[in-house]
Image (tube, rainbow, N blue to C red; front, top):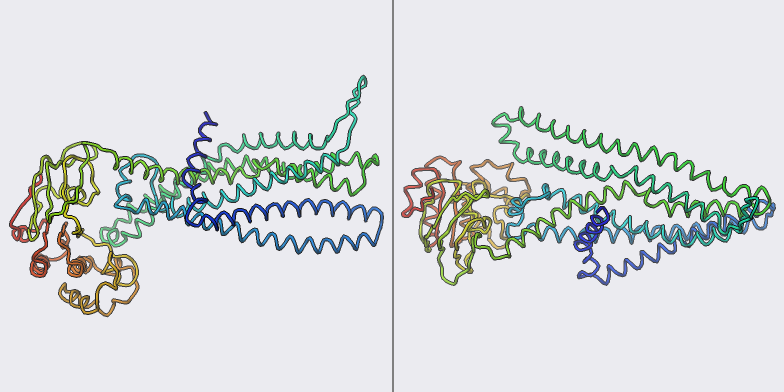
Length: 566
């Protein structure tokens, strides 16, 4: 079962991230990958040559040969220069691949997430895909960076194992095992000792480190929850301050941080076991190779150089075989991050399937050539299946002023259904083709940056002239913002809500949409100010259809038609 789970995990990861090597820039990517492999082989060659150089050096010292000593000094200078060049080149190539892979996977996930409201719809899909920002920003980084590190170190260890197994086999010679009755010749005894030693340590270390995977996953989850809560509080700091919500937020943060403490302690316990094992293992690995080879040197079977070369080869071979032990923590963290990325990717994939499959219990949006917004037998349901609207049949034409009366929450769902963000229900919504819909929520989104760009969002500020901007700002009663048009700021914080809602009107005047959906778009203004905003829209955009959700009686009276939602 565990093997099947691991196999399925790797297959899912390869399906998600593997196409990077077949992407648009595949020639460059594959070239860099080949370069990384070649540089890794050269690193192994340097390691092999260093053991040969070490044997020659100790033989020269044992023979007290000054000429051979100077030769080895010259060789180590060449090795020094080559090793620096190969190491630096290897680092540059590896980090380039890591960055490119992360960028490709980030673009892929953001493209799926930030597409036609998927970022909103996916919140209604069950599963572990909370905090998508953290999964894209942090977990994608770990998933790609660590994958390259782990694959490279595994390949390096494999080459190391192949190279030094042969060297250690040749250095081992033949040892006779005398059992009294029979003598058994053992070839390559150091190789067998190294394999048994490393295998025993790896199995023990892997068993000890198993709890670390779950502990790491739990910690990353609670860290993301804590970070998300802090960001949410920062984004709503004014609302919290006005109602003195700090007395609620502080205990909430303490609870979330308490979860971090618990996860930290759980991870610490897992690390304690690993460190207890690895600290003793590292000390033993340093002394064990020399102790194993020393008897043959004392008996005169090998030279001092051969002893040192045997010890170094033994260490390299054990190091290669100990890859699972040395990378337990990194593998655990990598797998936890990959699972979080797969959780988000899986939810987005499931969402696409839900949207694509024909379902009579889903609202259908159809684009039509005629300029009309039509509801045909439209029913809206809540997520729990309770019907909010049943058999709504209406046709709205350009210039209509329609009040969406009744339950405001149901009206909100109706607007979401028109936007394609609420598929739960039945019936058809016919939309006018080539005539975009414009939605005015209670608080317009004002991205950080220049005020000019924030006002023109989602269009480019280059689409509108300075005179048009100034005219619309003055008309909406926000002329005082004209000097700040080219200032950079966080406008959702820097501007009062009334100013933000007036800028919503500025956007409408600039965009001149044919279809406007207003949901309490001016509720922060006094009744007279709200009436002024509606009159400006009626006067400047007489041919536009307007659907309005409002609690203001004066505004309700300004509409000729009503759709009552019970």
